[in-house]
Length: 248
Ligand SMILES: C[S@@+](CC[C@H](N)C(=O)[O-])C[C@H]1O[C@@H](n2cnc3c(N)ncnc32)[C@H](O)[C@@H]1O
Image (cartoon, rainbow, N blue to C red; front, side, top):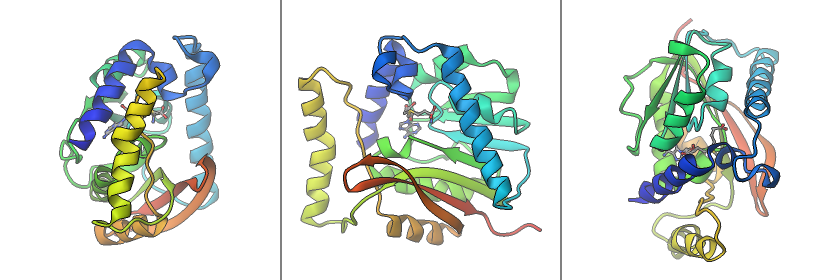
């Protein structure tokens, strides 16, 4: 149920203004992104990520990568310069249609629509690298928590996941604060946005300690975690670098 609204919002955005829905710069609204500039930003992001991991001494195979919440494939296509095969997954059929239209990598980039609250479309241990940026922040935490566990399940031994999710205050499940969070980030925010004629994109966070617990439970080894960029007051954007133990 929680994902229905996310799917509906991104299906509408993917059909009307897909590049702006991914990088919402005011001057690029109404299909004013230059696709070359837009995709170049994706290449720069992934080249920087790969260089950063190499500097940290984090090594992994470059066979198959997953881009979770791929949108129009801005990062999937960039990953295809570093991996033999990339799978991009998105909840929105219109985004995936756009991704296929923009694909310049042929069979090296495969795109999948997944509306399930898990990643059961993939078998265990199939990816060497998983990347997800500016995606989990739009998904209600109860679903994101499952996806985070799924990242670990999908990694091959010694595979690595790098994902971003905002950090914010801890919220105890079943508490009044949890009920308020659900109302405020769901119906209240959507209603407020609708009234102002804005897309009903949700913004969520998960407390960093909770993410660590989830990764530990899933059997992932947290290599590092760092703050990068800001989301809102009291919420910061945080990256988590996780390895699947095992392998040589
Ligand atoms: C802001 S865009 C980012 C796209 C891409 N990560 C990038 O940086 O170019 C967020 C994307 O996440 C997708 N998304 C939201 N919820 C999702 C879910 N539960 N599973 C997969 N994709 C999801 C949206 O449809 C949208 O395409």
